[in-house]
Image (tube, rainbow, N blue to C red; front, top):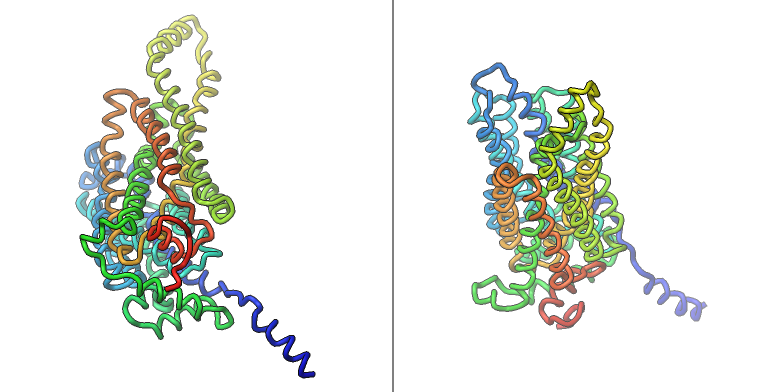
Length: 493
């Protein structure tokens, strides 16, 4: 009997201890409701602008200049929110930063829902942009820090998935609700997020940095389950935190800091330079200029469905195919689609006079609408190309850029650097959104798409040369990779 006990006991002790993910999923769901609200508020002008253009109220009637600001001022608010998050992430914590984003969000929706003047609409858009900038900076970091390597890839794509689902929800509600009630509906996910986060733990890594080891232990035990090996993970986190000091300007000369910061900043810059924001904002004008014969009220729903499908595919492949593989695939698909749009719009601009003359001649001969079927077939090219652009972006450069930012940034600079990434991203989006239609009017629609096509090639080269593969790596292993430049290992001392 003694022999049997001595043989079986070690086997029981050495069995792997599995983490329980139920509470982790609830914490992630609570946080990413902020991204749902972000996606909802980002595309809020899509169903609202047509109604304001035809509004009988002269105080709310918008001209082209006011419409452009109504669409783009959100990105300025997001940049301001990113600056706020640079301070709040490390001082108040990731969870509290997400909760504080509810204040400008609720105020913004109330202003837009009760708007009596255009300035109320613009201020409401700016406030919801601030909330979006805060959540875009804080939520990916929070989700990454509470997740373990086995599910971090899939959960890291949740912010992007829920943002896309928020956009799709607005498109759907826009078909049945008045534009004022869309503002009221936007309050629901914000308030639900605020209530749920009251019961969720702070990030264990943030708690360790604040010297709250016991609270970090309880948080990790709650997230992983009492039967998991949470103490080993806690010790790894503590060792990683203790090996770092506060970020000083002189530290930026170290590859441990400047490499991941530069990679993150350039990825967010190149992400926006693909033109995804102006394409989504000006989707209907693009279809109009390329003679898309499709009812505009269905355009947004199709786009939203394609975006949601693609990010769900990316989530399922994130920890199987790897981050870099999806980035390569994403960049190549976007390159092909941008090239198709460039060639189509360039040929259309060259042939427009000939088409007009030929069509007029046929109409005079009594052959009305002879070219109808031909034109309808050709106009499938920009529609399919736009769907491929959105599919490719949402499959790789959309969610993975957010995920990599939260994975590779060193803990000592994570709060400030993530806020900086958000600022760079949204300032770039604002500039592109403002210039897109001006460039299309001055040079033709092919000009911006040719520029975006070149950027896609740059993205592919950047991925090959600068982006590390983080699939299946702990945050501590990723940090040590930048510290040593040689391997994904955890320092023993």
